[in-house]
Amino acid sequence: MRRILIVGSGGREHAIVWALRKTSQEPVQLFCVPGNAGIAELADCPSVPLNDQAALAEFVESQQIDLTFVGPEAPLVSGLVDQFSQGGLRIVGPSAAAARLEGSKTFAKDFMARHKIPTAAFRVAESPEDAIAGLRSGEFGVGPVVIKADGLAAGKGVVVASHRAEAEQAVEDLMIHHVAGREAAQRVVIEEALMGREASLLVFADGRDYALMPAARDHKRIGENDTGPNTGGMGTITDVSVLDQATQDRVVREIVEPTLAGARKKVFLSRACCFWG
Image (cartoon, rainbow, N blue to C red):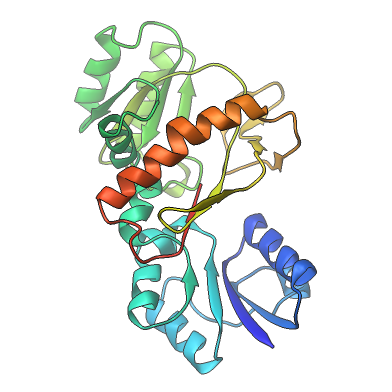
């Protein structure tokens, strides 16, 4: 019997657990740390601290886990895959170096600019004063602009401001005040607001070869008709209307493949089995 550990506690991990149980072609015993009440109906949820890498590794060794699958960003950014790989434990997820693409918006934007990967025009601000000056410079016009806190923010570090006053307030909220229980951001990215239908294309990759998941669309903003602030995620849909084939081919050609090529140059993906989103 295969024994698999899924790390995480949200809807994403619940879906992974459900899919593994439904599609496994051989008997499988599933564990999830920390899990939740719904996941507990499908998998064992042992009391192992999520932020204690040594405890997780000890659990995997003691329970003879065949494979660990990491869902959340925070353990990846903190180097869980690196520690497991160094200990000879099989794990699915990017290294800490590769996870910086998700863990730091500044790093990701600089990476895209260096490798000529299409992305919205941006400016990095190291202080509230710098950010306000950038907003008042006219570089981003007088219409909508996006303010993003650098680092992980559980989906709550992005403000789509409809005008400059709202953008300046977002800078204060993100860089000076402690909003939504998170620490004040040390840096923010001021970004051009792109209008259109949102689509997410998730990719499994080993550094060179890759496989696409079906395109999906998030429901991020809390109000009807895309109004109100971003949430950590209000659900998602996927069907053939989300991303047409021609656009998907362009995304692969202009974003997926150049990203993997750039990561290989930095030796992000030389040994790890990675999950990219």
